[in-house]
Every structure is written in structure tokens, then in C-alpha cells.
Image 1 (tube, rainbow, N blue to C red):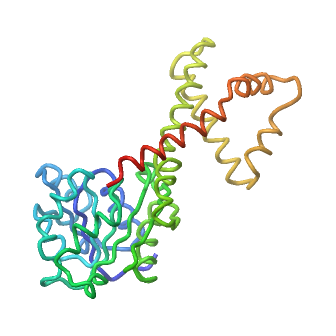
Image 2 (image 1 turned 90 degrees about the vertical axis):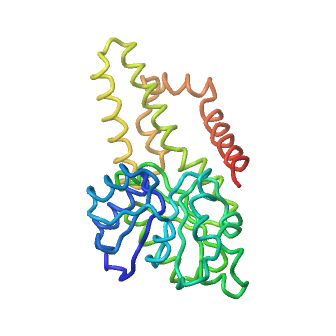
Image 3 (image 1 turned 30 degrees about the vertical axis):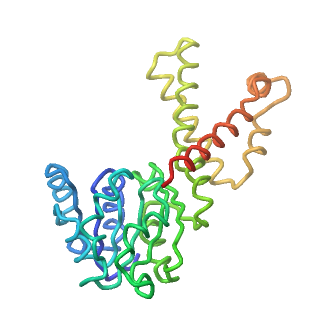
Length: 282
């Protein structure tokens, strides 16, 4: 990827921020000298600096002053405190900058309330905000991120965010109302997959395999199935039908899943996650 010729700062240096920093350096979007990070913990600042060769500071206002793009990567309950140094008067002495929030559950309206109160309405466009819901496979550059821009984000801002997030995997744009669904499906989704893998591995142990062998068989099966799905482009239902011989072993297993209405329970579980996402959003 071509370098963005901008500076980027991270308020918060947790796992997802570290994954983003590593990804954008690896993709060539930013050089380490163009990246700045903050954290309340000195140990974390030392780690992020040593690991990625970037500068790390304690002062969030310094991140804001020195960065063209600011990534908000703190825990949701810490957002107001983290932005307090800049929210008092974000317009004073600051050039236009793009704000990208990866904090779960913090709605655009809330972010605007924290960042815009000291700005005149005509100046709010100087701080466009894009809310993002990434997922944990981004840590291995295989993530999917749903993003939603506020009304002040320009097509160029959205393209910049897409390039940054694209260094970690796939990027899709949604209206903000859809982000609860994105959270339920892809944000929480890896946990559902891990749950199914755990269950299959336990089934293998019940069949007499030792734990390592059962885990290995299960993991390889998932990896192979996903590769087959990806490379053939076939629908999952069609691939399932091809594996299911009439009267065979697969049919016997699927009959149990259908009798137990596992598909219905999965749909209900994802719906519950979406409802909870909406309840937790502020």
C-alpha cells in the first residue's frame, strides 16, 4: 500500500491498538516515526515503544496535537476521562483531524458530545468521526471491521479509514443503526466458532482420543472447511449437501442437530447479542 503521508496517534495501547499499529507498519501505510501512542500505564508505553519502534507518551492531549488521525482505543468506560484533556476545547490550536473510534458501544452521538461542545457548529467538520467495530481475528490480520461515519466525514476520510482498517482484514461500511448487528455477528462471532470447536474437541475426547489429538483433528477440520468454502465460492448449504451421503455418518450427526433445532438456537443467540449490544451502547 502507498504511504498515507500523515501522522497517526493512538489514545490507548491495548491489544487492538497494538494490532493496528503492527498492521499499518507492515502494510507500509505509516513509518514508525509517524505513529504516536499513549497509555496510562508506563509499562505498556515501554512495551508498545520497544515492540513497534514508535514514540509513546502519557498525555492524550499530546496525541491530539501531534496527529492528523487519532484512533480512540480505550475501554468504553474510560472514554470520557481519556478525552477530558482535549474535550475542554478541541478547536483551540488544532488543525483538522480524523477521529476513528474502536471503542465498543460508544455511539457517534456520545463521541460528538465529548468532542464537539466547545466547537461552533460550523467547525465540527474539522473533527470528522468514524465509529468502528473490529473483531479479534484482526490480531492476526484476518479480521473484519464494520465502520460507520458521522455526517462530517468526507469520502476522503472514509477512504483513509478503510485503508487503515484494511491492513487488518476486510472492511465494510454500515449505517450506525446496523452496528449492533455487526457486533452480534462478527464482533462476538469468533466466540461462537471457538465454542463449537471446544464442543467438537470434547466429543473427540469422549470417543477415546487424547486431548491434543482431538484438538488437532478439530482445528484442522475447521481450517480445511473454511479454506474449501473460501476457495470454491460455493454456498455452505451446497458444500454440506455434498458431504452428506444418504444413510451415512454425516446424515446421522446432522439429524441430531436438526432435531435439537441447533440452527434456531444459533439464530436466537446472535439476536440476544444484538439486543445486549443495543442495551450497552451509550
